[in-house]
Length: 140
Image (cartoon, rainbow, N blue to C red; front, side, top):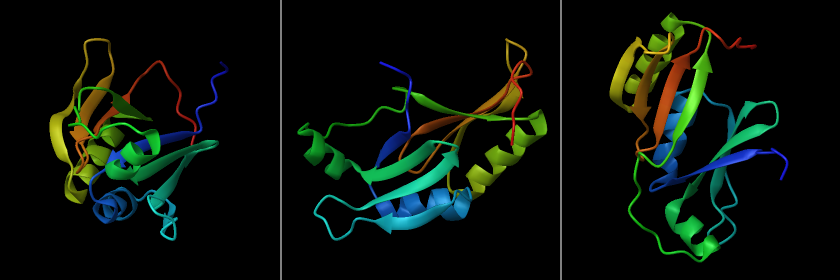
């Protein structure tokens, strides 16, 4: 398998609420909810970086499409890492997320490996790490 991840889909309980969080709260670009003409088709896509999109799709629709039972989510199953260019930017993004309705689980802090990071959960419990890694150059 070649590494060609192009979409990261998050299961959400309330599509409109998730749309407002990511579009209005975090400022991610989207055309809004599409696919409403199809049963289990309503979804929203956000452009992240070149060749990568974030999708939000109701958990019920994911369960239907995958033929799996909907189970209770666990926020510790995975994290989404958003790398930024400075400690100050970590703090700015964390505050933006808090104002948008996120729960801050760990405020920005110096890490044991020499970086700076913080964690928040979106309204559906997905865990995001906002991180500055001095070893990685961030190109805007």
